[in-house]
Image 1 (cartoon, rainbow, N blue to C red):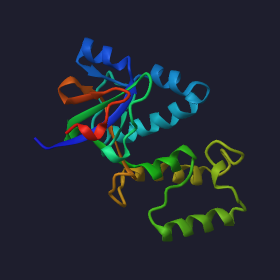
Image 2: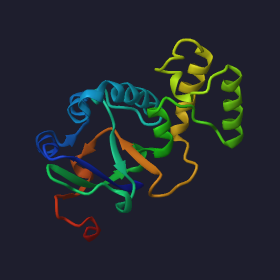
Image 3: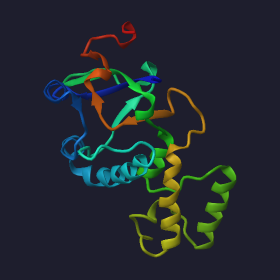
Image 4: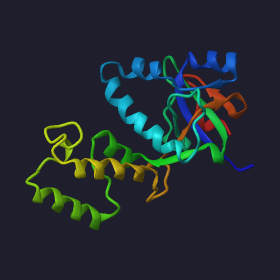
Length: 197
């Protein structure tokens, strides 16, 4: 079986779920607790991500949201107070890769162009409409006024999974769960990720 190494920082309480159930999943309440007053905005974007990612790797029915992972020790969040880092070895067919910079487009309600030529064509298209602000089609002042543009923006978001350049810093991974058998190491604050294999 082909596997990949992934790294993810999770709340220290996640270890109780792992010990009790043999896996860790991401629930809506966790996002609400982490994001607090901006959680509705993120949950809306995550739900869209879930729909798209589910077409790549099927989501287990009892899972709400994916678990964000780094593909390299070089770009992994380090363990801090109340947070653990799980060093994982995951079956390759369980992983959904995406381009983190493109995810920023989604978070900002922007169109993800196919390439520079497509970007220029899109900018010309919205300029002809008399629109100067790219950020306001989905949730801003232009919402509902240009349904074709809104649909074009949302449809472009599937490009988040198209990797233009593969490197440790621009590519991230998502998994639907962390199974106990995938956990190679659990790092706590002060542990050196580069000391583990």
